[in-house]
Image 1 (cartoon, rainbow, N blue to C red):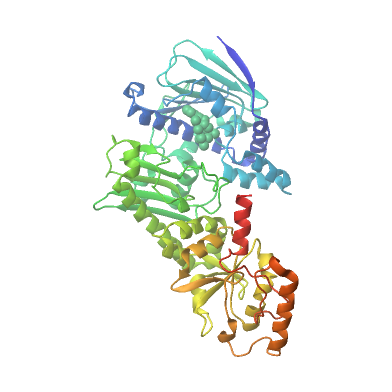
Image 2: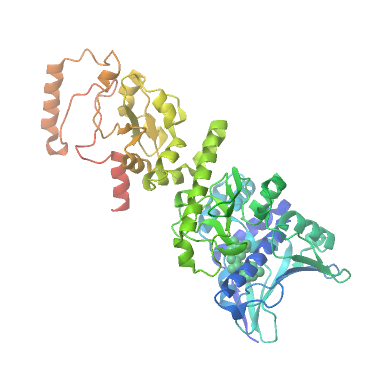
Length: 548
Ligand code: ADP
Ligand code: MG
């Protein structure tokens, strides 16, 4: 028997503390987190078994929750893939997920750290560590499918953990035994556990049994995949529980899309659009959160192309009977079936977002603030959906001092106006004080103030919306004098200003390309304009920052 003692990675202890203290009133969730891990593990074993049949479970898969009300322990036992010693160190020894350090920073900076922690855990998820909310000691006994020998991982959730190799016979799978804290003894109760399983984990498709010394094993969940039910049979609450328990969400969804499509391709989608953006939305290695099932068998969570990257905040499942279980991942990825499903789902999401915008602008703008940046990637790179995304795009209006739609901009254009004027800047404050805006203010012509780094890219890439060209007022040439009667500086003496311009050009020499007289300023003496063929200033700054 070999034993190894290890410390948690630096931030893990800190995070554990935060989790335990700030989620105290939501402690029930420990069970759903552990059951969802158990269910994931069973699915992983089944999936690997497709190519390595010898690791498949020859018995029925199940998850057992065994309680000992005398010893005050709860044990969750699964027939899943199991973990070896390396897996244990990697998965249970760290919470080294992306965003860990920014998580800690933002909690330290927040004035109400408890609520901040709660909100952040919402974005972050707690998973396995939630066990320490109710347990003073956790013992994980596990054997990996296809390997001999088992390991015991043990920790009090404080400084570190030990891993001990055991040689005696162990079934493949994982047991997680919780030694309940003094203040959490109420969980050593069969009825309480049954109630929690029903509430949080009913839809887990693996049967979950409960058992105690005096009560025989009985099934506690209905084990029917939620999405296989007809939408009319599913309550709001069930949808919401599935979103949290199975998809690891902590917020309420903004949109739920549950549809069964029959025809040349049969599939079911249960997709959620969240209200709050997760931490890792812009991490390049982030996987999609849409799982693919073939005829109710879980295939993968990161099949490329099931959903466009600019909808990567969508979470949920796609289940189809139009693909064969035995095809390889690459074949699945490139199959026309997936392309068709993806297309139909994408259209559905976009049309639902459009409906939401129509119904409740303010609510939509809250969504837009979280995910607009991501959707704009579609404007830039996805020719197919560009026009549809543009219809639901919001941009800050100089005139209205709030977000508006591009269509509203078009509706309010001046009589002879045929361009969509925009200004890019790092911040709204910076944009609003720009001298470029003076002429527009004076003539009451609206300008869109764009402050996301990607704006300069998509607007120049797209070129126009409904045939009206986008025009950067800090780069492109324009003449406002045609757009209304009065010119702001009528009193200007042309001859005099031209000679001043010449004089300035003389002084600045090669530092500028040219010096010109403008009619678009009211108060400021000068404005800087990008040179001919030059880049938009903001774009130039972004490019410089990327390639120093
Ligand atoms: P997540 O489920 O989001 O990956 P968790 O903290 O819940 O995060 O779990 C961390 C990891 O530990 C899992 O990804 C998995 O690899 C492993 N794990 C946890 N519970 C089990 C289990 N019962 N069987 C096998 N692996 C498990
Ligand atoms: Mg988990």
